[in-house]
Image 1 (cartoon, rainbow, N blue to C red):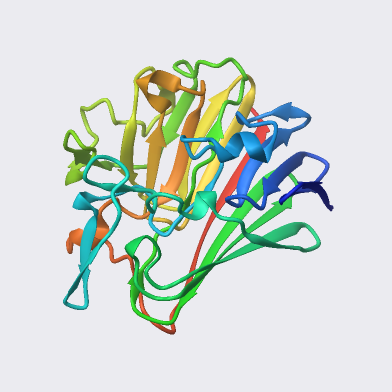
Image 2: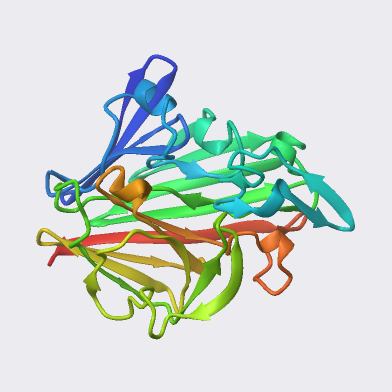
Length: 299
C-alpha cells in the first residue's frame, strides 16, 4: 500500500506492508523514516525542511557519483572534465547541490514508488543529459532499491543510497554486530582516496565473521558476492544484498555522529581515474540498472 502526504513543496510517500513501513520524500528521493514492526530502524528528520539543511546525506539518493573523485576531475574519451570540489580538493557524492538536494518526480505504484530526475549536460561538471530513476519497493520485511539511468552522451554514473541504520535505537553502535562478505578492502590516503586493494586478513577490516564494530570506519569493502553484509543489534537483523561491487561502511566520524551505521552499496571510489578498478562509464544508448535489498528479521 502506498499513501502520500504533502509538505508544501515536497511530498512524502509511505510504502507499507504488514512488517515494514518506509517513507520517502521527493526532496533527494530521501528515506525519511523506516520502521520494522513499528520500531524505527534508522535515524530520521521529522520534516523535509530539516533534511534540506542536512550535511550528512542522511537517507538520500546519491548521484551522479557516490563517494569520492580525486582532485575533482576525470578523463573520458580523451577529454578532461573538471568538477566542483566539495571536500577539500576532491568531489564527494556528486558535488554541491547534487541529487540529494534536488526535487525528484514521483510515481506511486502498487507496492512501490518510482522517483525520476533529469540531470542536464554539464551539471556539476558531468557530461551528457542523464535521466536517473530510483524505485523503492516493499514486499514483506524487505525494502528493495532499483537504480536506473539513461544518457544521451558517454558519461560516468555510480549512484548509491546513503541510509543509516540504528537497529536498537541506542545512539551508539560500537557493540552492534557486523559481518561483511569481503576478503578485500580499499586502503586510502589521508583524504580517503583509494590507494590499493588490500586483503582484510589480519586487519581491523576483517568482518568475514559476525563481530562488534567497535571502531570508526569510512572505508570501502570489495564484495565477494551479492550477500553483502549483515548488521545485527537489539534483537533485529538486517541483511543487505546487492549487485554493486562494493560497500562503504561509514560509522559517522568523529564517532557515530548519528549513533548509526551507513551501509552504502556502491562502485569503487575514484574509479574514473583508476583503470584497474571496475568501469563506471555509461555509454550513450546504454541502460544502467543496479539493485540493493534490505531484509529485516528478528535475530
